Image 1 (cartoon, rainbow, N blue to C red):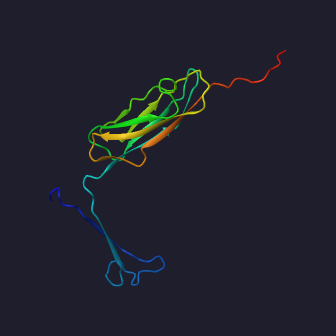
Image 2: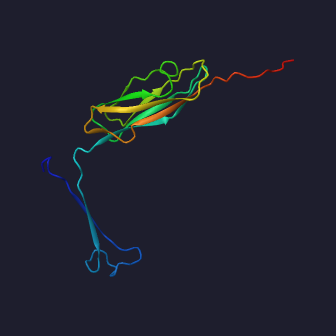
Length: 173
């Protein structure tokens, strides 16, 4: 057939109510059998959704050994070509102060479904509340029939390691 022809698969099965036995106890003999059939027409060139998740949603400052955070961009179906995904970055954390600035693009290699966006946490000396980094997918190019899915934004949190100053007075003997 030509590429324009729709493929249709038909399947049938005998339907027996859960509270009844087959009236004649002989499946598929046509006597007292009830059948239902379902036709499925695959859609040529289906949509390939691109989504994001915070796969390691927390990072932490720690002198000498910071704990990174991670986002993962996910392609629903494997593509034959590289898929480039662009994104914006927002949140209360400051790039190049609280974490190494992110590039704004990530590539899912042909044949893969996932691409990580690693967040390298920087240990500043500021006493900070927990700070967030929010990544929002903006576009996907390269593969066939790409579309951003419903999960286009994910957030990670960076926790601080500085202790608040001690208030009051302490008696040291």
